[in-house]
Image (cartoon, rainbow, N blue to C red):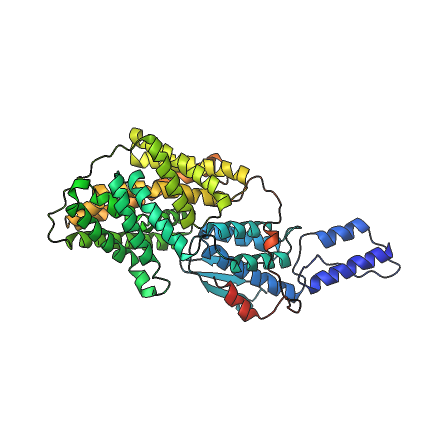
Length: 502
């Protein structure tokens, strides 16, 4: 028994040396014979940062975890919850504050606040549902028996350094080109010719969307330039192709479907409701400015076609697309949304199913109750169905909720744009045009209320909440980052931080 005790203690020291801490044990002498079960449970229990090197690795892991979560689209409340949970499992004290474009992390060391370790992180967010789900799962499992700190650290580096699903430029271009014609049919009462011409407009907007990574200055004006481009061509098409009975509004709005600020606006409203007032307010302000850029771009683009007569309000006819064809167009839009959100193929089934349910409920309820009530009911159903599907697929509800939002936002915001936004801007009625912005906030608030109600009915139905029935698993083990034999836990910290700067 004494030999077994020494072996366990030596294993404990080995784990501590390589960054896998265990709760403290005193080295026994030859005449001591501690209880074997107590020693085994002590070595296998929840890890503790028992050394300075391990504590440093904990801080580094939590810092990189914060960057990863925010970079891949996690909301502020969800990020704070996951960081506090991971820090608790690692027995590390942490204070976190997430703002719109930066995050503050504080690791208290002593009772003297001057000696606390503080980090300010600037993060640019871009939705990547595949990596977001993997990082979310990692944050929920780190510190447990099956995911010690060293393993979690390697997993996180593997996720970050790995390629994004559908992140190549041609996939994103394909997403823009496919979403525009399908959106014209599904959300904006367009006909088949509107869909064909919208494909051209969506392809042009997709090309423009590839420029901001190269020129950040251009990115600040992407919404205005894209709206100007789409509005000009849509007005030219509607004027010079009268025999096709094309609709200016359907072509213009469907060409801009991925630039509509509804998703950011909805997340901002939900963050304000959940208590993250600063972050949510910043998102809402940014979304409102983007919507104003789109409105002015549409107005100016239409006015540039000076040789065409003034656009008649409500000049679009209902094409009456058969329901069987609507299913095909809905599947096409779901594929475009899944690619745009960079979800892996394994997530597509649940996302498409939730999107289809949300669209069906939205259309049925809108004919009975109106846009706002229909939006609340649709969001409620999306939240409930996403939570139920997550029990089966083991995916986080967030990915399916995002997919459901894609079929709610274009229709709801598009209706408001047509009735009180774009046409008022075209008529130079700026005061009434601002009502478009207010109506967008109402639509997004309706979505937030519906999602919150789903959280009340089925707990964990809100944005990315953890699953009720948690299965302990070692996710993506085959994709661990393999370190070189001579590399150490610390390594070149500056070089690793550059790799982790997503």
